[in-house]
Length: 320
Image 1 (tube, helix red, strand yellow):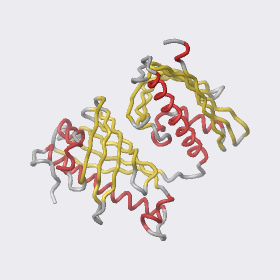
Image 2 (cartoon, helix red, strand yellow):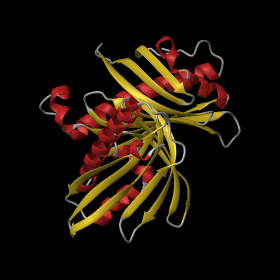
Image 3 (cartoon, one colour):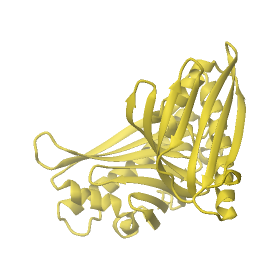
């Protein structure tokens, strides 16, 4: 790396919310998937004092990436610095700092600083990184502003569906992981495309049929952990949703007889599209119930098909 290959950027935004509230959102990476559009999944791997090691799965210029970073929290200065430990190509190195600056008791100014260089000498790689940093930084700052300025409930809803299966975790996981076969195994999946350039990190696109005969297209990034869980986030959403994250969770049953499998959804309604989709008389509650019924219906169909597959009952297609 040469000095000229290092780029530094600064993105900033004014937020009408107290600085401590904004700093708390930045500090808690576990909440990032529901706050920041690029973040699919985030985990705090280890923490000691103000030092923290995190792992992130996120999108960059439409591709899925994962990396680990070291973070240093400075609550007094309301800053969090970070440095990637295992950058993903084409990134050679990247770090930066979140800085929250109080303006008044109810307002603050946030700066997001980055420094980075490419893994190669190809200028196109450095330009690709710059574009990804610009796009993600502004997306994250806008989303941070929205979350911090929300008054009262933000209409985030989480719900589960669970099925007991007298089969192995491995077989259940295989059914859920091999989503490229879902159009053959699940009646509501009309078309499916699965990409997996990095093992365990998938991009899944589906056309899903609805009860009225129409179809909608969704695109998700999935983080797959054999044979325990698959976490995902939709990056192309149906019209009614502003956010949809989910998790397939496979757990041994207490009685030792097989496993329990849970489908968990966390959604936020897009209020601007309610009337277009459900009619002028519909409200947020109606939209939530509509979404819940649709997602739970599809989840239970998938869980029952996984049960049939794991218990050896044919090709895994749910019974009619």
